Amino acid sequence: MAVVAESLHAAPPVAAPPVADGLRHDWSTAEIEALLAQPFNDLLFQAQSVHRRHFDANRIQISRLLSIKTGKCPEDCQYCPQSAHYDTGLEKEDLVALEEVLEAARAAKDSGASRFCMGAAWRGPGKDFDQVLRMVEGVKALGLETCASLGLLNAEQAHQLKDAGLDYYNHNIDTSPQHYANVISTRSFDDRLETIDHVREAGMKVCCGGIVGMGEKRDDRAEMLRTLANMPTHPESVPINLLIKIPGTPLDGVAETDPFDFVRTIAVARILMPRSHVRLSAGRQSMSDEMQALCFLAGANSMFCGERLLTAGNPSPETDRSLFGRLGLQPA
Image (cartoon, rainbow, N blue to C red):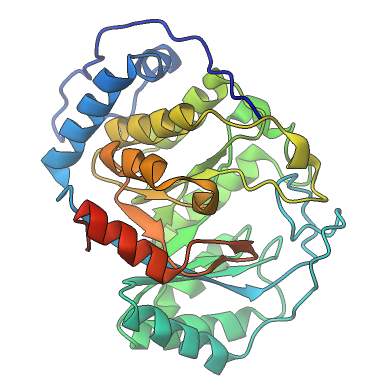
């Protein structure tokens, strides 16, 4: 399918006003749209310059993601094959056994991952929550960073996860507040922000990003990034996902995303949140090596490795090791 790029208007590089800690939490939508509209080379130069001030540009943080409970989720997220609202041919699976999780975590560590992430297709933790807490304790005992994505949390559940040893909680905002209702109706944008607040108050780190390619416009991407960057504390991990179009989901037929627009989103995330790990997340299997290299140049310094991301395909570890070798990248 031919890709039609959004019109670009040349603009000079946008410099953020200095602040005491080097971070800003007061970005305007106009400022972010100006960043997105810069000439591509100028934007990447600015993003790479910011990146090198805070990170080793040739180091990549590696995470591994495991689906610990698959399918029949009551939410109606239009991108998700695990939603019970859509017929995607996905078989429902109950919560996996503790030893299976620990075996996967050991394999992840042996392959170079520093963080092990567990995702459950829940609206929020239910009757099996105690088993998940034991999983967190077990993975933490292996010497890995721990992350979980379990849907909406209340304050008590967030504290229980913290006490079990959870380092990061993933809860993406997905898109802009304005576009959100076009994608999800069973929980609100504010519901997501409330969960993120509970995670912060419990003392865990936040993993929070969004998805590019769900029919949103450039101003939606700007608003998504503004929401993330204007949080009182920037998310420590910011996953930027490229929509994986799954047959049977409402977004299967959405128009293709211009690869350069995706790279621009990575670059602006890096500029707005200079000390966060920006993760090149879902959708890598459809990306060329050259597109992934541009994402690293734009400031992405984290990624998921492993053949699967929950239920979707992902490049093999061998493919990633080959790409790292060609680019001179090393696991952080």
